[in-house]
Length: 114
Image 1 (cartoon, rainbow, N blue to C red):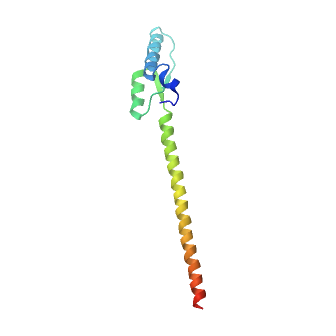
Image 2 (image 1 turned 90 degrees about the vertical axis):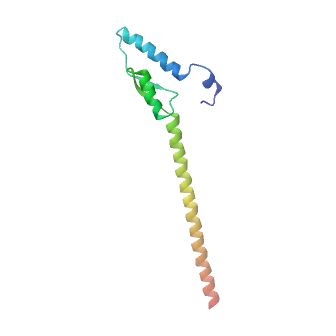
Image 3 (image 1 turned 60 degrees about the vertical axis):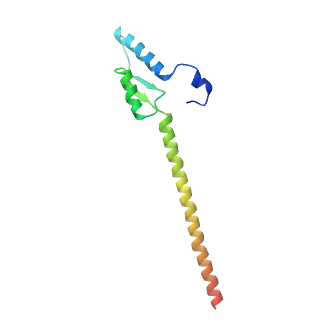
């Protein structure tokens, strides 16, 4: 789903576009014209839909493109790693503070003992 109303409500849905592409390509093929390998994209979210797209466009469609879902997954992973590193760094700082506080307390205790 697009954040812009135009992209959601105007135009032709991806399944219709893919169907029209197949029909036009079939007409060219039946006339004996050259048909290049085709790639389709848009509306594919999950892995199983790639196979559906290839099956619906067979034998002309050779590639199904996906962008939003793999990019979203990669961005979530990236943010998770960044947050993990940030948390790890904060834990390291806390550990460092605890160690330094213990060191300072020991110094004070030794000074008072003298």
